[in-house]
Image 1 (cartoon, one colour):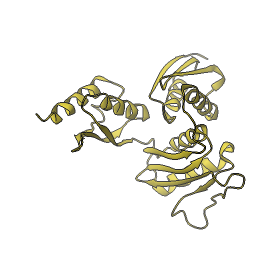
Image 2 (cartoon, helix red, strand yellow):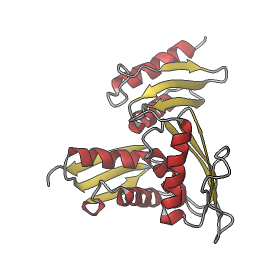
Image 3 (cartoon, rainbow, N blue to C red):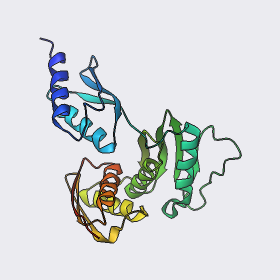
Length: 242
């Protein structure tokens, strides 16, 4: 018996049940490959909706894998070259990545890319296609990998970030590592008072507690946490107020 239609229906039901995905406003194409892998395609409102959709689909029995073709509706449309330049500049200006070589194929010989001076083994290559940023290369820690990904996500025209950076030497991931990366992202965000926000993580689900100045700051802090590579869920316990 072919369970393919049943699997697709179960995924659709799970996505419709979660209002955070917003399936009615952002309909998705759901299909199954011959090997049982689910193909999700479409444009969602934000990174939280994307990660939740992937999680719901993976949880359905019979799904052997996920082919992710989900994209995020950008806050403003930007050409790929403009996105590349913004990502490049963000990485070049980040003090924590000062030892990394930064390059972008097709950027042209006049682009102010940087050659690694202190640690030649660290390099980040930026490519952009249809608003999707891909980061390849090698960095020295999971924190640097995650920081580079968040900086790319902050560019307004980005529709997705594929973080293919390798960490060398290899580093064991943990909830503590994830929590520290979220704290760093909040500290780097000039629109957030990170001193008033406490961050913890358990099983890759991040909890934010403390006080936000207003609803906008609370939402930005929550999105920053979702942007961090490896975060599977975010629970906001932030209280509003000045």
